[in-house]
Image 1: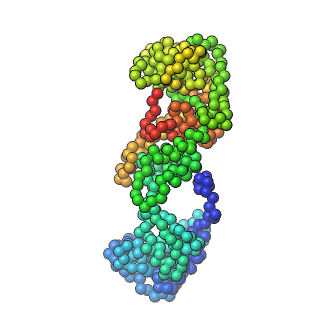
Image 2: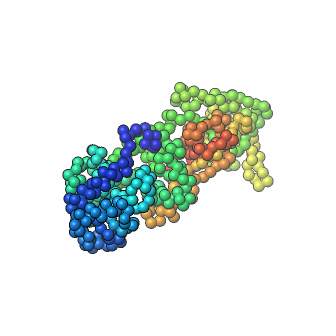
Image 3: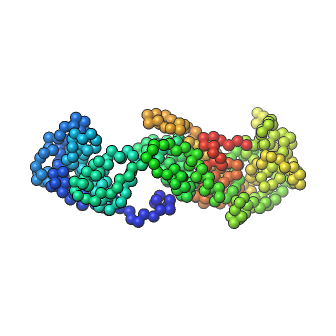
Length: 460
């Protein structure tokens, strides 16, 4: 599903279990060629003998005896751990993978595809090269940690006079501030540290899709980093660059106020309703327009207001003028506070003649019914450290990796969004409508901020 979502359609999907019968017969052929034997060492004994480079006591048993015992393994006459089929390579080899690796083991568990048809199962080292050869694979691709297994890959195919594909190893993709190890990701999911495999903070494809990553951005990112054998850690700025490049030209603009602060335009009548036609994209006229109503009561973000002005600040302060995006300049005349001095409402006057051109531009929404409630989920790096330690990785989890803003307001047309619809909330970031949305309240996940501020928060 994820491969097709990325825009790639496999010519055919196959499974190793499709070849269980062929693999069993190849196991018998290995025995006949004196390249395999049935062994009764326990897992611990076999490991100890490999370390000491000692032969198994059953290494030189007669071929016919191993053939018979391998058949008994298939018939379920042995219990789990009582017998294995091992390849006869070289117990003194410098590469520990070559010290008679296991080819088959007994396991009385139903297989997801073959059910209870089999009670013996081939190992990865046995299966990988054989299925590649049977399918006439030209290039077998894997990450560098499998390079040590190349010796056994080619040894088995040569021992059986089978076609040998070209093996190509490359470095694993490592991203800053996250992990890609399936084992560690499983611990995060099972431990309740994240919402699930599709938690927007994870690097899984289902999580990236839920966070709003379009396939083109992922493909562009992969193309930009290329394929290499050199170990490297890719910074999140590279991911964000690919993401913004795609989203900036394709996503509709809208307004969302995360921390609403009420503003009353004193020189407007109480029933003032002014319909403004707003382009959905500043450079893409073909994307059309939407209507935003300007009323007497609007909301701006509380971060766009300060009681004291200062140099370099372009938001509202007493006596200061700022522009309501797509509307009029407003000048702050009075601040209404509660008993504790916390601002509750700003009284402003609008310059309907637009005689001033202030530097500060503020995003806003009108009061209901011209805005709608929304939940905004802001995401930051999953781990505090850029390069996550193997030993203390759980302790390095960032407790601020998800912040939920439950009382945001959005334009009314945004509240009609379907799951997966994307918007650029002006001056905030790119967002996607999440599957947790309801008809009463939509949920939006932060996909990426507007600038390279990974780990930071934009200020007015």
